Amino acid sequence: MNDKEYTPFSDKEYFAMWGVNTEEELHFYYDESNNCRKFWLDSSKNNFNHDFRADFVLAGIASEREFQIPFEELKQRFGLQKNAVELKSKSLFRGKDFLQCMGMKQVTALVKLFSDFDLYIHYSHVNNFFYTIVEILDSIATPTEINDFGFDYFMLKTTFYNMLFPNIDRVTQTMIKYSYPNIKTENIKDFCNDLLDSIDLRYKQKPDEKFISGMLKRASKSTEMVFIQDNVDFVMQDDYSIFYVDPILKFPKAMHHFDEELSIQDKVFDMVSKFGNGATNYEFVNSKDNTMIQISDLVAGLLGKMFTFINSIPNNVMRKTVTGLNNVQIINCLVFNGLRMKSDMRNKGLLHSTTAIGLLDKLNCFFGLVENEYKCRQGRV
Image (cartoon, helix red, strand yellow):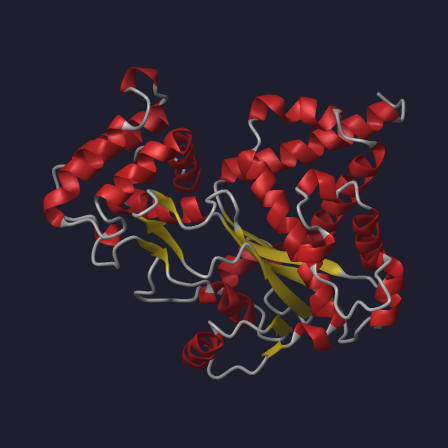
């Protein structure tokens, strides 16, 4: 949402409870994927300015020490042309979706780098639609109320996402109609009622869905929806600078190497100066001068495609999709997921998701199906 008050969360006890070691001393290298720079509603097109299924991803590789893999070696490993000057996801994976990429020899070469050089994968990604609609939930019910009614606050966010997502076109039109996320007080009733009209009838709903519908009905009679008022019309994410700042502050003993992103570098500097006491554990560099950031570009590109894939594929076709994969796709999927698991075991803070829990479950289900398919083909099941 628009930057009203950015407050970094830095409670070490809280992080420790979730398995996040804030004393991490790795070197992190970053690039981004699906960076629309600003997520907003385009009223002239009656749609979002960016594919809502394409999550913003800030990701890359991490290593125990600072070093670079010679570009000549990368050219050989990836089979680049002699005149190539840089590894780029947009050229290497041009026009391919996640599963098509998993069938490429270049992905096989990429995942082999992780074992050859003892690298870790890391990422932070943001489901733009989820990120904005939770502001509605936070405006109609407090975490205490949710808990008092016997519901889990984080799971209820997934429920709300699942209620709105099937009718995304109608929800989008409602948002545009009322200049979301800047709902005027006189429009609160109509906004809430229009949202209610876009979801399933109450007699079909489960208890958690009925709770949300009831809170929306209650909110329709109120004069305030605090998180979706007094913002800029149509602008749901002004920029993604906070997602650059978070790892810098979360891992103050690590070094963070970002690809140049001129549109937000000054803002990152200002926020780190304010909240990180002028921390200097980060830099923005030209990717042409750093092969580790070039590798991170490939990782971010694949992750961006992975989250777009999992946001888009219907549950009822997932099993059939997996059985249709070739052996190279199966192996690369397993190894790629193994890299995620390796990082998660090293430090829970290396993988950060701002999305519906149900979508993460869906992602794990996909990789579980891939593993079962692999075992079937090996004759072990």
